[in-house]
Length: 210
Image (cartoon, rainbow, N blue to C red; front, side, top):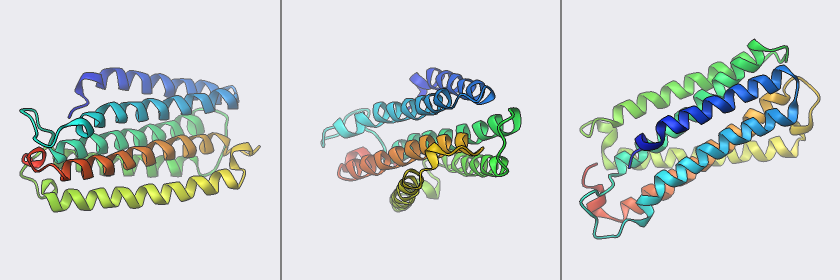
């Protein structure tokens, strides 16, 4: 299970979405900014579905290219890492590179970059099959953490929408686009991560490489 075949296309599309959001924010075009953020989220979610689908279809007898739970988790963590890093760069681009003003923009941007860096650390460690994080028990713990993350983000998104933040006239309108799009993408990928981990956990041969 790998992202390599579509990685170039994915990065190119995400870069285009980032540039589009920057240009929209610079012109104070809120609808266009929301569309750019939505494209970012949809591209990541579509990539996550395409990446995880083989694990769901793999028969219980396994195959010569059996999918290891470690590889599956690593691919999903990589996508979540991209989501955090994209949002961090978008915060910087909008609130440091345009006339849109919100005092917390750089703070949230820095937080996203930091969390993205933490995910990058996990992705790097999971590249080594002998790492302690690659053990089945550790993989299950990370899957549970993804579940907690999805629940917390879901609560945050419900509050964001219920509080009417998406129709604000303050300078945080672009931030709210990022919160909604980024939060949804990360929550969605986290749910797929759990689904895939459960599916592979039911297939001993598919987990033999972990």
